[in-house]
Length: 194
Image 1 (cartoon, one colour):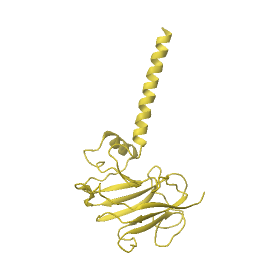
Image 2 (spheres, rainbow, N blue to C red):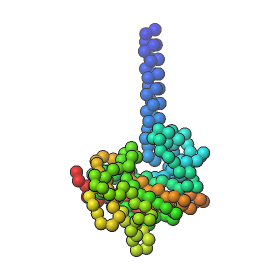
Image 3 (spheres, helix red, strand yellow):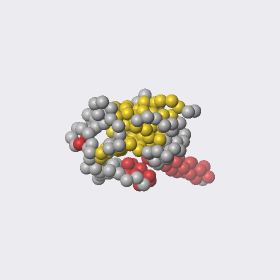
Image 4 (cartoon, helix red, strand yellow):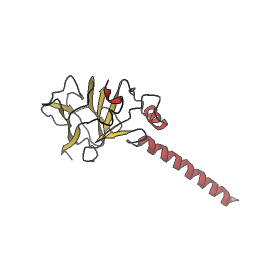
């Protein structure tokens, strides 16, 4: 009798812990269901619409973020550099290359919880289409890091996991097969402080 009760309790505990662990993993995974990856960048183009999967909706509800509908734009998140290394707050990175067509774009750095990184120095926390200095040919080169840099620089502070978010507003990428053919800038690691 006691053996049956203990085995039942063990089976129920394993089921509850396994279920909770799988939900936690699905909600924490950057490249989950519905994700589109292009180089170092990941986006969820259906996140703001009725086609979003239940795990993505749960992630949005848990984090309390505002999402863009397909007609509004798409946000790309890079949590790794172009060589596959995890982005770290104590390192500097250069986001360089051409950007897909969009009426407006913004680029900012966030911590591992997707909160805006506040710089230690009084400086811009994001670069956008109207303020960016352009390279010959129309591309951009933006340095993301704690130490001041000439040209386009996003000031950050802190250590630990970091992400870079590129948001394209009113872009034709989301119509037809545009997203599959998109070319996004590279994220190149620079010097690290630790």
